Length: 378
Image 1 (cartoon, rainbow, N blue to C red):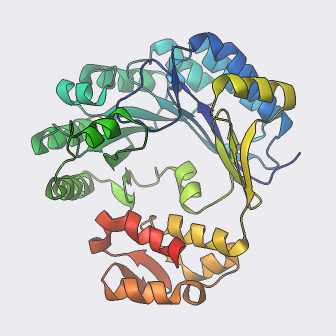
Image 2 (image 1 turned 90 degrees about the horizontal axis):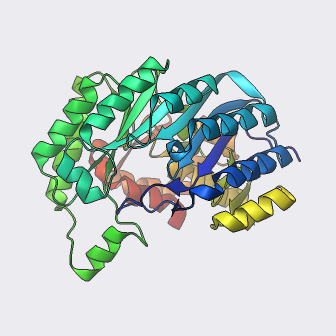
């Protein structure tokens, strides 16, 4: 069964410990299932190979680097066997400083990965402890050194701000530490309270309070200013890159492009259909091994709703939405589909429309989620 996507996401759901804020699907204490899981991933990929050479490949989690070097090598070898890969493919793997070593870094590089997204989150032991992370600041620096020694020259760091118990000075220190490591990409995410997490339960019980709004804004503004001073381009609400080092895989998401999704609870969007696999590791292994697929949810998006989703995702991309490109991609015109919404948001100073390109204003950046939702609710 051919699928017209040139981006691939593979989910690795295993973790050493569940971070207290994390809402992503993952499981703890199931390492014995890893060999069967890799075989199931290969079976699913073999049954539905991409029709085009992969332009981006992304392995996320969970914690992919919880796998041994041998298991990582086997996972990547199966991808190379099943999927044609463009010579210029951006191949990203998420890594945790607490589970990365020299052998794993070498296995990733020799297996074809050329970009690493390292979950640093903070550079203070007390903040990392609040988050429930298993690493310390020194392991972040050590991991960057290991990756460079293995041949990686495209390394990104994830950071979180507005964490209860995190001071403005802590945030400034984390940004400076990340910049000092001379990485190519920094993601700065405001803490969110996702359903089912320990943080959200503490919030609902009154045991935890979110950071005040003024502190969220102060930290976000400082990140934008400090990273710009350091030579990073702010190209998406939470993402900053050295020139030419923007995440091609994530840009495909923000443009609502097609992508394959492989693994437990992985989602894919191909040919106007969205499918999500079962959120159970053992059931995923059983179904994917037996049938080559493990869907739990499948829907065909109507063309207009797909266009609305495209606008909602794309408005987060700071260069904006080019009117003609949107027509070419979706078959719908921005003005005809969203005229009243655009007029209202422009009047509020949240959107600007220049040279047939619609983009967020400076005022809108902290409100991007609310602005984006307007394109779906009309």
